[in-house]
Amino acid sequence: QKEVEQNSGPLSVPEGAIASLNCTYSDRVSQSFFWYRQYSGKSPELIMSIYSNGDKEDGRFTAQLNKASQYVSLLIRDSQPSDSATYLCAVKGNNNDMRFGAGTRLTVKP
Amino acid sequence: DAGVTQSPTHLIKTRGQQVTLRCSPKSGHDTVSWYQQALGQGPQFIFQYYEEEERQRGNFPDRFSGHQFPNYSSELNVNALLLGDSALYLCASSPIGHEQYFGPGTRLTVT
Image 1 (cartoon, each protein chain N blue to C red):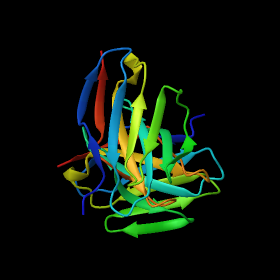
Image 2: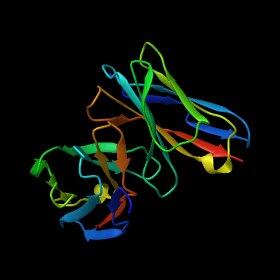
Image 3: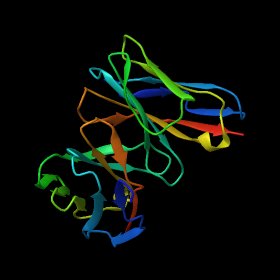
Image 4: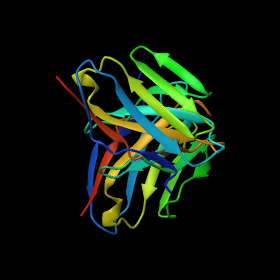
């Protein structure tokens, strides 16, 4: 079992719709959770961090964490073509090293 | 305020050679982590430096080594290059224990 798992996609949504990205992790002692966005040929860009159970909202982005289910998700409301990218889920445990999923490729169609 | 910088941008090496990649962290950040990202994969953790010492290491062979300088900048060295070392090498900086921010990366091609 991979440490951090994501659906590879591609996930395609129409412009203005809600995009839902999911991630599960295997290490129960994980403390910190992150979503990075990576455009093709570029480096990852941090868009959200979440540390406690529940929802965290930042503009059009909402991160959701459920530690009991070892599940973290990212919702993108009012999706725009500029949101088309690969979204990487990252999990950090007590050791400070971050483990990444393989990423989900999102395409937002005009 | 400059973000994380890396050099060089691109590099082509031959199997068996050695390479050194460089990273300057964002101002105020004292921790540098290195990652390898193969095409179509997520970044894989190589190691992390804090206070000029390697604090954590991922599942990479000893051919991968690093260094952190007193000004918090860092180098990644890879010896005896293999074709499989071709990847995007990413440096990320942070205050210790906080969110990590990535540099633009160095694209290494081994032929």
